[in-house]
Length: 577
Image (cartoon, rainbow, N blue to C red; front, side):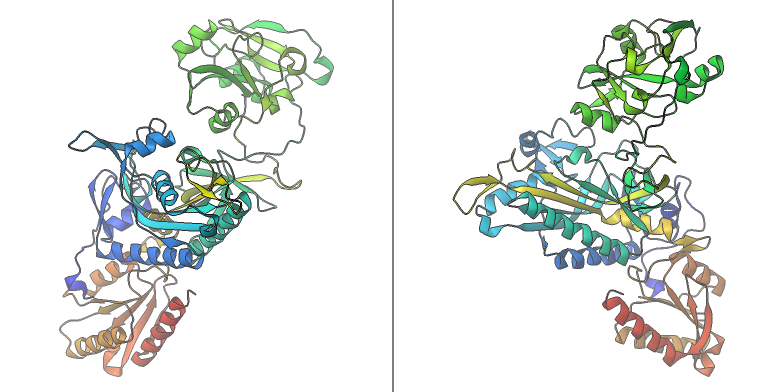
């Protein structure tokens, strides 16, 4: 492709609303353009990268015996109502009506559609297992689209769905997809971790893993052991159950009677720490939640944070939110900041670390008062003790005895679920077994954010000059730069090299523009193609400059050697190296 004819242009400055490196670089280098908030056009360079990623995904899905289909984006609302998700999915589901006032949704995901398809196509165990996948545009009405392609309202996704006759079959299908995802992200050049995760709105009855690209701007926190392979999203992360007693009172004073103390306008943990001269580990923090319109109190240690996902799962609730101050006052009769577990008339969930405290401080359920010497073993109902907090950095690993948890930031680029019968049962996807009995299919679901991978890669692969694409997904394999369009030898050499490389199947972007060399070199660094061949003053001697974008190494080599190197590079890429 001649750069003089390329339908994109570079920008010298980053747009003001581009907050992260990947967003800035894709705009500046001419890969994407914004149409509306969270909605982007892929220019030719961006589309080429996207197709390379798609091809890697397709190759690995096909190798894992998955079959490609293409399902409608427009989905009847009846399907979502049949599965029970129409009212649960939330405002991210883009809803619309046709001219006959029939309700539809723009698909954010395709569990309902694929289950409906399979129930009509497969009726016998002889056709199981089967895994189907598609690469298709999805829509989610994000409240706050941000970070370019990382959180958009329209995006490209690969979603796959497995159907098995039993749970053992699902385990095998899940493992095939899990392994395929490792190969996909490795081939894309990503540094990533597979972490245990919560199923979220997709739901399911089995295990689930997120694939997280490591990046400081990631919106997810990963807790990983520094000794073993344990890693989990913070929503799911656990810590060891080693007993570690805390409490404002020492063991010798744990039998002291509860004492009510006057704490005027002392509402927060920080204020309690300063007012009573105690560490946060000696305080019991009580928060009131509304779970499916039912009130419940959750108690954690003052230095810990409540994990709403764990609370939601423990209650089996569909929706959960912290109660506002008016609701708290109405339910408990006291202002926020003075609610405590002792004598509270609401159901109380007590975190296991609170249950282990020797004694502590908690709200007295009376304005401007707290209790001292509250002994959980003596004074509280411990029938609903569990893990209701976020793991903390430095906590012991729940899988091994030596490790400690370390925190990392990550971008979710893939997610695999064991759905079980969540959708197949509601949508009646069944089959006849060898005995002729009807059985419900066991499902798995496997998603990859194809367009999101582009941004995740750039967060890991860039420098102060621009993009550094891994060779496997770069828009072109070679960036051929003609230094002087007015020098006949350089012009002829560049044209011959351009034709020779293309005839060997090498993808070449040829900068034939009548621009200053400095402009061309800056654009080349910004665009980020792995290898640059510069045709300049050495052309008369039959030589060119070979520049590697990642290392910055430069060599003056013979034209024939440059062609030979690209031929070898092409063979490596074709082999998936």
